Image (cartoon, rainbow, N blue to C red; front, side, top):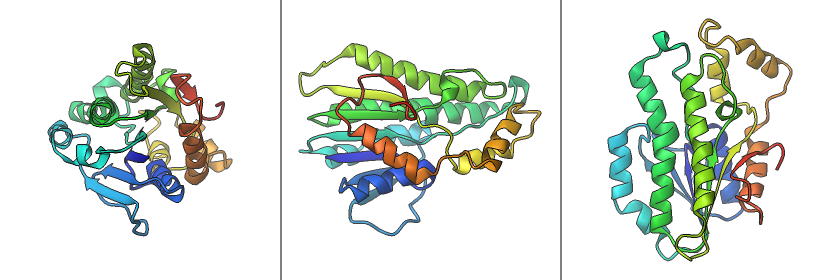
Length: 241
C-alpha cells in the first residue's frame, strides 16, 4: 500500500501524512514546498504548484506518478490541498485568485484522481477533503462553496460509475473533516467582516476551544480511509462516520 497526499507540508495535510507514515504507509507528498517535519524514509516529496494548471499538467504527464505506483497493491489518494480565498462578494474578488482556487480546489483533485486510477492496479481509495461549505452556501465564500460542492458531486458520480476495470474497483469519498485548528482558520479570522459576515462565528469557535486538533482529526480520517466501509457513502462527515 502507498499513499499520495496533497498539501502535506502544513495543517491537516501534514497531520495526515504523519499519521500514514506512523502506520508504515509510504507517502508521496505533493506541495509547493517541503515539509518541516523530521525526515522519514517513508516520505517522498515533490515540489509542484497544484494551483498552476501548466505545472499540474507537467506533473501528471511525467514519469513520477507512474514510477511511484508501479507494481503497487492498494493505493490511497488524499486530495487535501485547498484555499478559501478569494473571499468576498463578486465585486471584491480577484479573478486570477478565483482561477487559482478553482485549479487547486477542483482541477487538481479531479486530474489526480483519474491519473492515479490509470497508473495503478489493485484497490484505489480516493478521499477528497471537502467541507460543510460544499453543502451550504455562505456569504463571501462563493468560490470556496462552489469548489467544495464540485468535489461532492465528483465522488457521487464516481460511485455511480462502479467497477469499470474489473480490478478491485475504485472507492471515492468527499469527506468534511469538521472545523480544525489550522492556518486556514487563522486566515478566516483575519478576514474583514465586510468580506465574510460570518467571521465572528469562527472567532468564537477559537475562543471557546471548539477547533479540532489536526493530529486527532488525521487519526480519525485515516481510520476511516482504511475502514471496510470507506466509500459506501460518497459524501460524508468525519464527525458522523
